[in-house]
Length: 420
Image 1 (cartoon, rainbow, N blue to C red):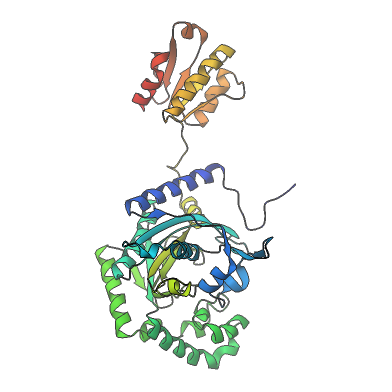
Image 2 (image 1 turned 180 degrees about the vertical axis):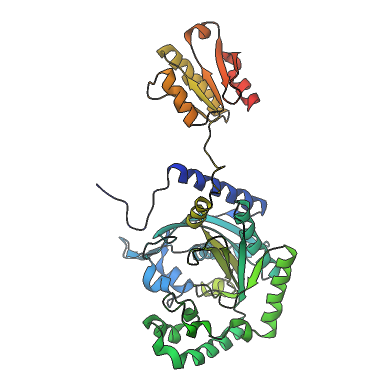
């Protein structure tokens, strides 16, 4: 037997119903906020992620799926969504347009991690990227959009943990403070952190091995090293969030795991999930240097990503999916070959008019077909029999009221549409 690769899942049955529902809510909300859907390749040139995510990041050093194609080009399966969207923005010269570009994506990502609850090697993220504006009100919009989508899925007790890494001057001051702080303690930390202090000290704060260490907990805080410009900007973001009535907590420990972030960084957590490792549903931040670093103009960007796998798991855990069920509008029932031909035509006409319709494909008797219709939660039954058909009639049964009615076969499509 050929099994699926480790760290992947099949999405089917009740899970597929929840996935479809989540995707429907996401796309509707994105349309309301006027975000344009974008689909970038599942694989890109490896250089894109090495330059954007960062050579020193755990993602690039340990987790990317890298391979050479038949042209001897180094290719990487995308581990996150931002880099590909920014690459597309630059490659298609959309920065010359007068408007801010607002994108959303929804697709699979790949990281070679140890599979565990909430962490898969193939996982699905939806997210947004807003390119071309540095206005703090955009930060607030992006954060609130993430919050409102999760809220509209029925997830309550959400909290935004927010921080600021500041501008380049602030980051440099903070980096120096971290190096001076960690140097006397570096031998007490993991081997990766010993490398991180040379390449990117902020990575130490995001260490999973030493996460509970008092050394990390007592490290200098980013907010204490913000210059006046960065402080003012952060205060404006918080002011706008207050106006939008978004629950947040300033958390100086939020630094995010990617190299390209500056200024606003944030995560959204479910306070109803007791597992602190899996209560983070998504996060993001501003990246005002990334576009230029990828050979684009000196422009601005901010975005977020949320893991759909985790959201679906939370909906199941909190039993928020019970009202989400797959239903059909009509089930057409027949027994004889002549009735079968009529059913074929009726089913096609209903489907072409947007009616969700099903019929028997296993040559079951009427008793078996009634059971299938019940499992499919059919709202109406169309029951065919030769005697009625000779009179040009079919029987329609309302499954809720159990009332039956004889309808002219030529008017059945209009009748069903009017009844739904």
